[in-house]
Image 1 (cartoon, rainbow, N blue to C red):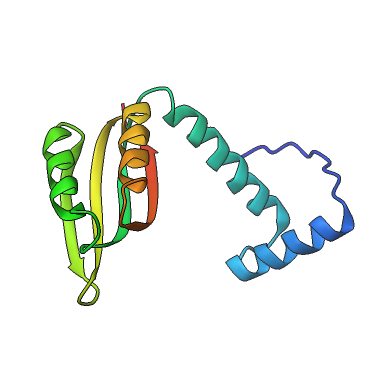
Image 2 (image 1 turned 90 degrees about the vertical axis):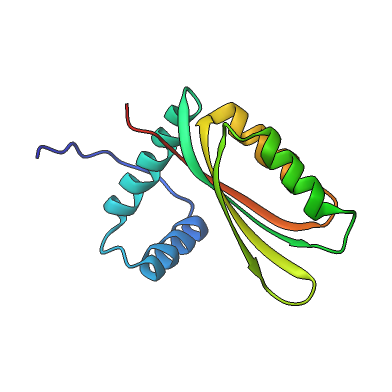
Amino acid sequence: MAVERVGVSFEPELLKKFDDLIKAKGYTNRSEAIRDLIRKALIETEIEKGEAIGTLTIIYNHDEGNITNKLLHLQHHHHEEILSTTHVHVDEHTCLEVIIVRGKAEKIRKLADKIKAMKGVKYGELVIAKTPI
């Protein structure tokens, strides 16, 4: 495969932090790490234009604000975007839930934001990827 060389300028402190990061991640060189960052940015841009699939992971206290019923109601309301959920009891009060989602990226992000903002949700993270055409 043909490649083109480009130059990139870094402040010394930023380059040191980047080198530490790529070493910790197991990259053998800066070029591959930079290519991965560019690929990720391009994929994220493409995702916003159409269909996506992914997961929303949340951790919540099931004793707060009737959250269990609110989550269940919201998930039924969004049955077209929610494919499946997995529920884990972390301890007596804490639950971890992984929600598998599919649909328009914008709609999925709005649903994830709504869930993450619910009273009782302590943590939430959405990870989405573009679905194949």
